[in-house]
Image (tube, rainbow, N blue to C red; front, top):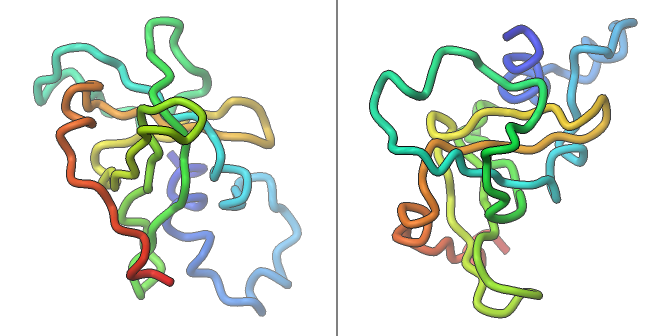
Length: 139
């Protein structure tokens, strides 16, 4: 849990002087190690009890489906992670869709010490029903 809290919410809130004073970076994750990672879906029927309490996973489950790629990590103005933008569906960028997944619907998956993915409790059908993110307003 410590790793998730520092990585997703706190790492970007730390000021430069504090980071300069740190000597142990092993619990921090850079966003560039997340973007481009895989988005998985558990593709199981979801109910309130099935999502579990673990804040992150140490590996991907063989039952999960690769359904897309992490495009961006979204923070609010206070630096708190509020979600991720996922590119889902399509093939070779044809017919794909960008959707925002709220932080409560995703969990971090450590692929190795330098790359990460996310898993969502939403099914492929639920993801396809999400509204597309219009990234033009961010530019």
